Amino acid sequence: MKRFVFSRISQLALVSAIALALCNLSDCYDPMDPNGNVKVTFDIYKWTTDGYMARVTIQNHHQYRHVEKPGWKLGWTWAGDEVIWLMSGAFATQQGNCSSFKFQIPHSCKKDPVILDLMPEVSPENRSEGCCRGGLLSAWAIDPSKSFSSFEIQVGNLEGNSTGHAPLNLTLMAPGPGYTCGPLVNTDPTVSSDIGGRREVQVFRTWKSTCLYSSFLANKAPVCCVSLSTFYNPRITSCPTCSCGCKEAGPDTSSCISEGTALPQSDALSNTDVVQCTDHNCPIRVHWHLKNNYLDYWRVKLTVSNYNYKRNYSNWNVLVQHPGFGQSMTTYSFNSSVLPTVGWEDEVALFWGINYYNTELLQADKDQLGSVTTEILLKKDMESFTLGNGWTFPRRIYFNGESCQMPLPDNFPVLPNGTSSQNPIPHLSLLLTIMLTLKLVNSWF
Ligand SMILES: *[C@@H]1O[C@H](CO)[C@@H](O)[C@H](O)[C@H]1NC(C)=O
Ligand SMILES: *[C@@H]1O[C@H](CO)[C@@H](O)[C@H](O)[C@H]1NC(C)=O
Ligand SMILES: *[C@@H]1O[C@H](CO)[C@@H](O)[C@H](O)[C@H]1NC(C)=O
Ligand SMILES: *[C@@H]1O[C@H](CO)[C@@H](O)[C@H](O)[C@H]1NC(C)=O
Ligand SMILES: *[C@@H]1O[C@H](CO)[C@@H](O)[C@H](O)[C@H]1NC(C)=O
Ligand SMILES: *[C@@H]1O[C@H](CO)[C@@H](O)[C@H](O)[C@H]1NC(C)=O
Ligand SMILES: *[C@@H]1O[C@H](CO)[C@@H](O)[C@H](O)[C@H]1NC(C)=O
View 1 (cartoon, rainbow, N blue to C red):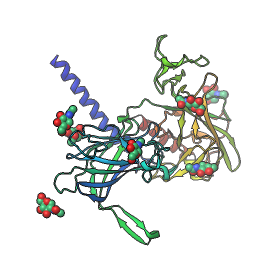
View 2: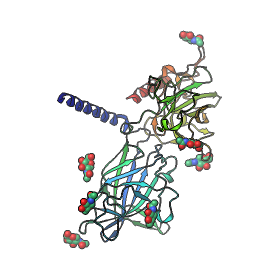
View 3: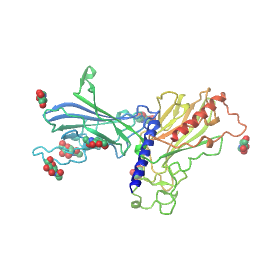
């Protein structure tokens, strides 16, 4: 028994050591979004007889990771016996034990309150500035004006004449696990402008915490894979087999449902993760089709398919890394933007839906997959453009911030025999292939 426990503990230790190593290498630091984080700020702007009023802001600084339904949940532990007298723009999920208050009843007396956002349709008296988006935060590169949430709290019941201590153990679920928040620390008071920008005003005191995302902590199953095709080869390179897990054996597993089969009626499938059975078993597939090669341009068709039977993706985004985005680009049916990158990484472009047209990636039904698609016209850089060596294929693709499984370069569609690769600098493309292989190897670990 003892031995068993010990081996479990050492296994755990090993797993967490690996987790830390993973985290250091690639997970907690995303080279394509080096400043990606969520910041939580408490701005105290008024003292009260027994405490203070504060504006709490959750700001998403991720370029392409948003907070989706059912929205964020913010929690903390009070350092003393604080209570929340009043709150606007959000609410505490539990009132807790307020039995020691005789006259005015606080909004929440919990030692460790959990806060949720209000819905957009909430009545005006419960609003505060920048509030009430049902917990959704847009990605920074897509819509900065909707990338934050604010709410106001009146905190009281502080001991003596104390001006308060920062809350401890901040937690952010956005919506599930994945974020780790640092302690709230005193920083320079937040300054804002007044009188049309001619006067600066500042809050009394500011506490700030930075929350970092780790997909390892989020413990999400892989969600996405990439397939490729070209005009010059009929072969389609499909997603790597079992990219997102293999079909479980046995007739009564309902983790995936064969194409064309009618969906069993709801109750059995209350689970939202019901996908169509495929060799890759991913809920999302991104297909990159090299469609045309013109004199000065080349054209790609990008299609994102949803294999979920019970899940729509609102405000989806797709990130693609490819050196060709260094040249000018026209995207026909998606919004797009080339993100700033650091160091020698290839250019990175972000794609997302057009309002009222395709911001919603619909679920699959019995007859067809949900999908959104666009064509992209890219200008050729004559120095580097080549059809050979897989240059035209993306180096990396993310869907909603999660990395997609790429096929191995060995399986890329190749040029037919006897075609010159139209490549002016052979060793450059060799170098690219080596770099690509290294990156793929990197992305496994
Ligand atoms: C509620 O708090 C009061 C005073 O702090 C305490 O006496 C009482 O036992 C608490 N009740 C519960 C159910 O915890
Ligand atoms: C809105 O505010 C009123 C009074 O200010 C309060 O009674 C009510 O519970 C609040 N509603 C929500 C949803 O917070
Ligand atoms: C706060 O309390 C301390 C002692 O507890 C006292 O020395 C100080 O003068 C008080 N400050 C105010 C503003 O009342
Ligand atoms: C904060 O979290 C740590 C680790 O989970 C725990 O040891 C500590 O007791 C917590 N502090 C409070 C005040 O809850
Ligand atoms: C997805 O969107 C469609 C069309 O708007 C809707 O009929 C369906 O109920 C939605 N599915 C879920 C799981 O919300
Ligand atoms: C997306 O594109 C549409 C039109 O092409 C534009 O109206 C809209 O503002 C764009 N959305 C964002 C978030 O840039
Ligand atoms: C192309 O050449 C390779 C070896 O050089 C050969 O194995 C392959 O069958 C050829 N493919 C076609 C379509 O001729």
